[in-house]
Image (cartoon, rainbow, N blue to C red; front, side, top):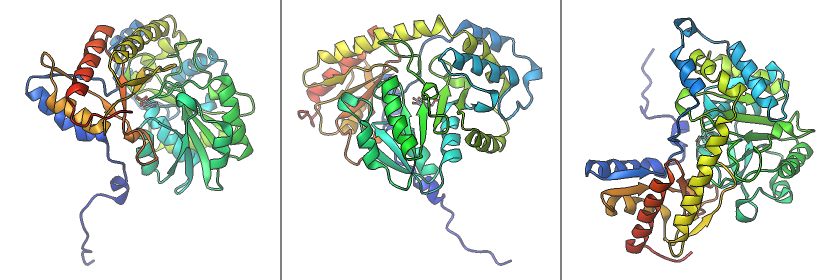
Length: 404
Ligand SMILES: Cc1ncc(COP(=O)(O)O)c(C=O)c1O
């Protein structure tokens, strides 16, 4: 056969992924490190807390017998552990309602692929976890931004209703939210859930930070809301609650059996999630407390330290989070990405600087988030306070300073 001449460039799919400011800033952080400057990486949600001892013990005892393919749904004892874990949150699930995944990231991908078709619309309250935009681009879906309620609160049900079209297939929420820390209460879930039922779309609920809530108990799960059995699909992860981001364990859960069957079929194509990782978290999942309580306390102290340090910088507006471990701050700057670059290139206090996440990437509406940054509270309070002071010093010399 004659050779067809082709342009050997990557796919249009890969090209459709949104540009990431973090990727653009990374070389500046590397250059600062090469100049001998310590960069406080407040830009990523990589926690510094030690994982529960039960996990490290189980990892030490891992055996070569576990170096086999796990069943696609998950190892039997691991699936049972997830059932027990959910029962602590008033969610009773059959084994078939669960699928163990490689973190929430794979659960998100499977949720989108099992519920939506190319070209469908997905409603997304903004700001949202930035990779949602890339996952939607990768699966050929359209992100339809939904304005948050006041102070980044859950969107109003009528606002959601007005944005529904015949093309709407799902709404993707996150509670507690990365980046805003917004927690959807029972009432909020009931309201958006009612719109999902009324208009036949899926409510995809990312509950990665479920326990990290500062006022009150863990965030309610969409699976605990009556009447949503066909609509609710939950995305979950052990990464943050047990400080084991590198284990890559999460899960997908829904009582919509057809969706779970479809997700399992898709999951069978990736064969399995590592057996050792699934088993390592069994004990932590069945008895998450008191460990998770210590995690919540650590983040409560840290976000208070960050809010207090931000409160000392003139012109900065910080938003107290209800949960998760990030703080969104509005800065008196022309462009948060330029400011983040300036911190890395031009600011050093005692050979230290800071990497922040500019937030335009967390919106689907062009131009939004230009003055906002996300701060991850992933260091002790003293370090965070010092890092925020450096941000304040940076603002004093930044040439693009404005008002909010
Ligand atoms: C809201 C949210 N969902 C999903 C993920 C992905 O988590 P995992 O490590 O479980 O893939 C993260 C990670 O930061 C997150 O913040």
